[in-house]
Image 1 (cartoon, helix red, strand yellow):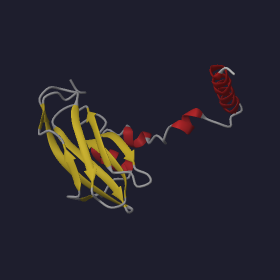
Image 2 (cartoon, helix red, strand yellow):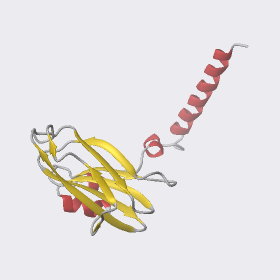
Image 3 (cartoon, helix red, strand yellow):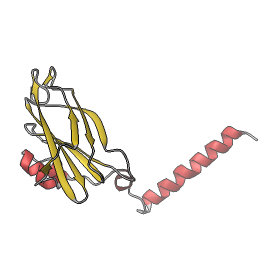
Image 4 (cartoon, helix red, strand yellow):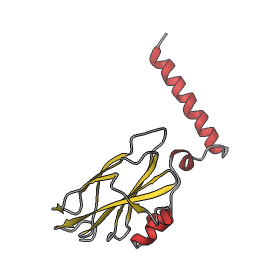
Length: 156
């Protein structure tokens, strides 16, 4: 028996079955592999609109959200951001940069008891407040830090 031939035939059969399901309209690839896109929140032009449209408006300040960002970012194109939520039952965390053209940077969902920790790099147009908002137990919480940008990121 040729194991490579058997593997190829299994793979070809699986791809064929998926292609038939897509063609028949039973499977929509965009919906199957991506989370729902909140276009109102991600295209908002002000931080207030972004917070409202993403469900984080009216958030209470919390010391249980730990933010690690530089005080001064030498290059606004790559600003490191780390955040941890010590609030029990955290289900989501979002990053907002108040003075960016689109303030909502990312919105993360944590399922099945995943550790509420994020680490990424963001683009900042200018010196601004970096805000981390958290949803836990049906309530919204927030914490923020100012980052001074010396070289332009998404704004120049």
